[in-house]
Image (cartoon, rainbow, N blue to C red; front, side, top):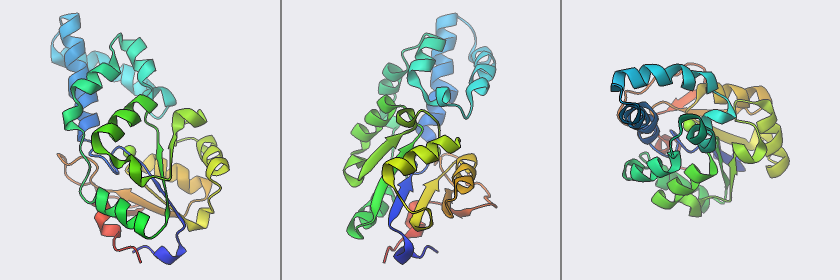
Amino acid sequence: MINWSKIDTVLLDMDGTLLDLRFDNYFWQTLVPKYYAEREGVSLDQAVKTLAPIFKEEEGKLNWYCLDFWSKKLSINIIELKHQAKATIQVLPYTREFLMALKQADIRCVLVTNAHMDSLTLKMQETGLIEFFDATICAHDIGYPKEHQLFWQGIQQLEGFMVERTLFVDDSLSILKSAETFGLTQLVAIACPDSTQASRQVDDFLAVEHLGELLPIK
Ligand SMILES: [Mg+2]
């Protein structure tokens, strides 16, 4: 599936690739609206309806991933709420096996995420995955989300990877398209980022159910 002899660097997304997107979906689709509904004295349904266009407005932008932005915009301490829900932060099947195999094969492993640093820190604390990474890069450090070409220019300056010898795995098809536009050719989509939902049909990229399908690394 992957010719591992031609890979020096692996760039890995966090939410929906290494970690179960169930947490983030539950957090934004249920917990935040529930908190908002209780505070405003409205029904959950009404809260979801009120929040939907506010969320939509920021989709694909850096603000979407910025906990400070949402804390301010919604007057909710988002990171505190995340801490309350942290028991639902889980790794996806085969994440540890895959990261361990990369380490054993001496392939450079870089976490590239749009997530806010506070969210990244909480998730690394809960899962202990940090030990597997040679570097972690937050979109907030670069100033642009992965959907933007300036993100890829920024990360290439930092990492100096060769596009043709770099594998990138993400669950977001629009982000994979952005990486493809930049020139990355070895791209893999995660078809089942949320363990509570059915896996998706992916046509434009090589897709796997989980990272275990990319093993073994020779
Ligand atoms: Mg993701």
